[in-house]
Length: 364
Image 1 (cartoon, rainbow, N blue to C red):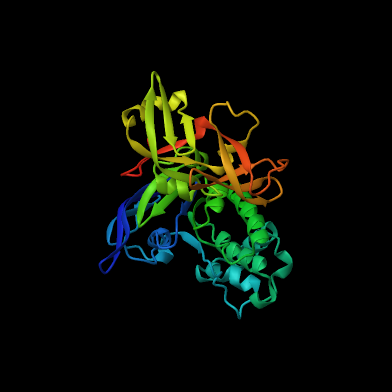
Image 2 (cartoon, helix red, strand yellow):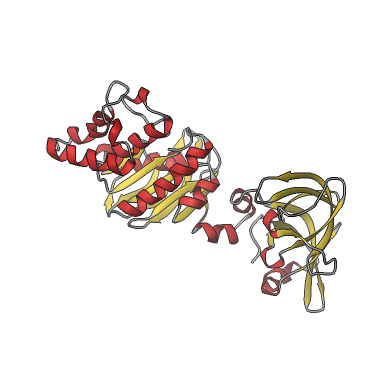
């Protein structure tokens, strides 16, 4: 295992800044996930760690060794690519053994490592097959196996599951997580899929426009996003945002008010929001924090007009309109809700999010 440290790392392609002042410490044995939209710099950062891209500025350390100018083959890393990058003319065994042969590992040791890894990944019966004879999931296991047999200090994964169908992707996420717990090697994983990031990462790095937005454990980022971008990117379905919401003070209490909504501010959030009294902010509320209620006088209750009902089995997504704004609520599958009628909803007040209207930074 190894610690990976990036200090003020930057990358420019001509005048275009792909990665800007990226600093991060990835701990021994940690499974770290870089997540963000296309073009945010996550793959470029991974490739700089691998040595496949030169860095423009900053320093990269692997296991206390500065690797800025160390060739990829000498960094003691193994990378798994999105397109698997298997040699089509080689068998599964030959693909997995190739890197070890280059290092002149003895044949009996190669046989042992390939056999153990193939058994671990459930591809022991496919060692004589060529990649074209395998399914997508089996090819992905071969690509993983080729990396695992090398026993490197760090594994790098560049969106390795994106070519798989949805069901297989879920299965492979679970297998990768189990594999990491079994092997324990420091791993860095790139994905644009925030569900993948949430379910797999010990910690997550959320990126946008080449810059780190937030680093933290999945639940921490979900519950306490530092800005509107992170709040909207992490979580599925995405958070509802309501702009132009007034903060009003009534005695010791605070309320956030807009057309069709008048929500009291939870006690633990009043101090942070108090300086915004009399001003407008952006209110954020996740669909799962809106539930159906029978009590119109309950704190946080409001009436909405149902436009679309989307049953998805374990819940119902309801598109509603409140004061000229569209919101999405996730309610119980037992609900009798129908379109073109009013519904009484209740916001979970302690889970409301508030954002500065100008900076988009989280308040509190």
